Length: 166
Length: 408
Image (cartoon, rainbow over all chains, first blue to last red; front, side):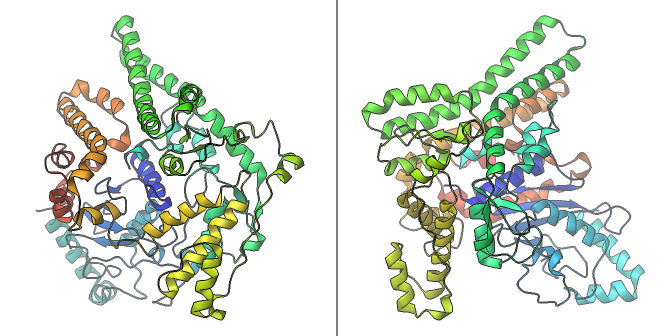
């Protein structure tokens, strides 16, 4: 039985696999469960994340696309002001317009049913390049990013290299 | 769920000489459900959505999903022009797409052949066309035969005739009910069959939308069902709300938040149906509410339905394996094909043939990783096995495991 959410997710999956944006791969882990995806994001060029490949899991609610999915980097190693130490991504596009826990996001940047997995992943990619330190998810990383940028970049590069098994 | 693999999509035009139709088709699809507009309505901020989609959005958020300006259900107006556009396009789509794909195949062959003899080229084209049509036909046949099993005798002729008509519209995602001939989504047929009255629905005007514009007479013939008003839930006590649901003829069990959500969903289904040229019966709407109940409402399992039922203690493994036998066989066949294809890709010359044969969507996710991203294949596999070890064991041993293990 195929619900609106499953169908819509399948459309997005098909779209992402036939016409993938640069540096992004995503799809359901098994086609039996369209509500659980894995995504791979390339570290954006010109940033300390360059060369890295970051795996994340996306979990979709049953009322998708009315509610947004959640996204979590798996395997650790993403040292970033907007990524919780457990890997959960904190970015405005993943927040429903109703609640604003951080009191800084414009409603226009938040989740809406016309957003998509592709837009989320592109936003996350640009988030990697340009952290938002107004309301950090990882305070340590935010402090380091603000005050000791070169240390931050070195740490990120180390993590990337570790992630690649080098 | 396997039928969704062939979901028609705007990306179908990519790679054909008509790739410019991709944005056209996107524009004819609802941005919320990504499907073709179904009873399109326009908001007061001039955005168009399916009636049901925008009603669901407005009832959760009260804002237009496209521009976030506030809007109300009452201000929605039907958008007949878009409806006719969609119908006309859906009508033309299969044959146009078929032509475009054929042209694409020929172009590719022309480019590829170069050195090869024309004779072999021709045969290749034929083979390819043959396999394509086989795939889509196979799918239809399956649903058709299942339908035949359930239906009563006298309708057999209809089915045959109908299937012939359908060869021209194999990809609109709709199939006809073998009894009443009403066209509906593939997955809706079985449920519909359970309560099909057998009365042939007046031939739907859908396919001739632009030729037979809605005459006032035909519209007044179907007496328009009355719309349900919104309720301010905070003004109602529990028992009053419960009674209200009972009066509407929908389930009234469960805690209060569920009652409210159920009423909202019913109101959305009902009012969206009021926007339809060919309104569904209340029974069908109740069925849709039942689907909602199982996926999002009171009977929803916290985990995925399929996984949830497999994990239950009283899970009936034999019944499961018989009902899903064809699915399993299909999966095994797919997996075999895929591993064959993998073997072939190791021979460089065979690679293009492989990418042509298997539709992109069926390829494992790993296959789409660009070459400079080879490394993450490992985490992907790890995650899969980590997240699903139990389900693998709980399903039919042997059969269901194949799809996981074979493609590697």
